[in-house]
Each structure stands twice: as C-alpha cells, then as structure tokens.
Amino acid sequence: MEVIILYPGFHVLVTHKIAHFFYNIKLFFIARLISQISRFFTGIEIHPGAKIGRRLFIDHGMSIVIGETCEIGDDCTIYHEVTLGGTGKDKDKRHPTLGNNVMVGAGSKVLGPINIGNNSKIGAGSVVVKDVEENKTIIGNYANILKNT
Image 1 (cartoon, rainbow, N blue to C red):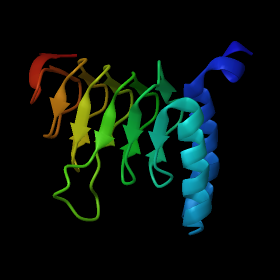
Image 2 (cartoon, one colour):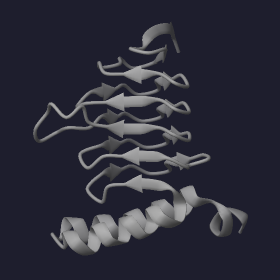
Image 3 (cartoon, rainbow, N blue to C red):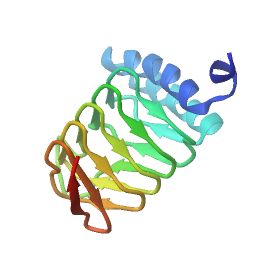
C-alpha cells in the first residue's frame, strides 16, 4: 500500500499508460493534458509517445524527463534527475532506446537516437551520446567504459 499511496514513480507510470493509450489513438491533446497534470503532481515528465516496458522502477523520480521517441525495455531502473532526451539535431527517432535490465544513475543525460544495450549500467552524472554495448558499465561526461558487467 505504501508504494501505491506515496511513490510518484508508481503514479506517473499509471498515468503514462492512460496518456499513451490516448496518444496511440491520436487524441494528442488529451494525452498531453494527462501527462502535464501528472508532471505537476510528480515532478516527472514522460511524453505520452514514449514506449515503456514492464517493471520500470523510478526511484526518487523528481526531475526525470523521458522524450517522445524514447523506448525503455523491461526491468529497467531510473534514478532522479535523469534525462532521456534529444540533441535537437535529429528528425523522426530523436531519443534513446534502453534495452532490458538497464540502470541509469542519478543526474545522467542520455541524449540522441542511441541504443543502450541490455544489462548495462550508466553511472551517476554521466553524459552519454554514443551507443553502449550490452553488459557494459559506463561513467563520466562523454561516458567511458569502466568494465564489463
């Protein structure tokens, strides 16, 4: 019950499912209205066009931004102040794709139409603008491979 009542990460995922439904049937205004109301109450902005897999865990969700063409696989974890955004240079697919079981650390910025491989981890405060292979842990600004996971 604690999660249902108190966790904004849970609330935003419930409202995203509703907004995503309206987005898919091309009722864009209703979809955006729902997402903006959810943003107001949770501090988490998920565009209704984003595709989110099962069991996404948003921990301490304040200031998370997930862009319209972002795709998130199953069993991922996202910490606070993460941006899954665009660079402003791309058309069509503008946002990242996260594989399954990806962890994105607090304050990280994952930008552009890049792919983050399954089972990868992005360290806190990292800036990622290039594809990441599966089973990698990366850290830093313009992140570098730290180790295989």
